[in-house]
Amino acid sequence: MDERVGRGADAQALHGLSLLHHGLLRVKAEPTDLDARLDCQMGAWLSMGPLASGVPMGASHGIGYVLGAMFDVPHGHTSCIMLPAVLRWNALVNMDRQKLVAAALGLPGQAAGDVLDGFIAKLEMPRRLRDVEIGPESFDRIAAQAMGTPWVPRNPRRIDGPAQVREILELAA
Image 1: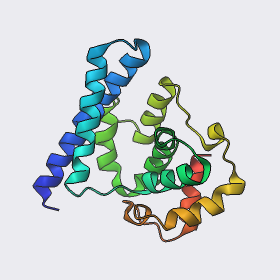
Image 2: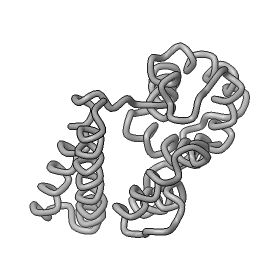
Image 3: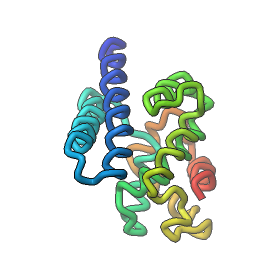
Image 4: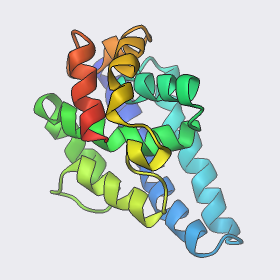
């Protein structure tokens, strides 16, 4: 991907994330706030745009796909549960990019996985696999299935096998 396209995609996604962050908190506090709902709609639209320009999804999406298929966990819940753990696991290879995420969520300088986890807690969404009644006895099966998705192999930090997926699952336990 052309570097300029990548920077544009980053700017679009980060602005969308910021709109979602503020909008979702306002909708949680006042469900009839139409301006907040519009911010959520715009934020979701902006956040999805980079996918059309070729930005790949990674382990959070791949593992979430398996959680939905195997355990009937709704997609929104799988993202809340898996994304903070995947951010923590990926921090070794993309800390600079994660700093941008933390800033878009209003807490520059903090770890993106922790910031996102705190945001999800404020929304009172499930944050751990145990919250959706998935325990370690299922991790090997989930990890093996996740390796077969098109997204896990495209994760920013290379995932060579199910053992690494299991590491992420343990972070999300």
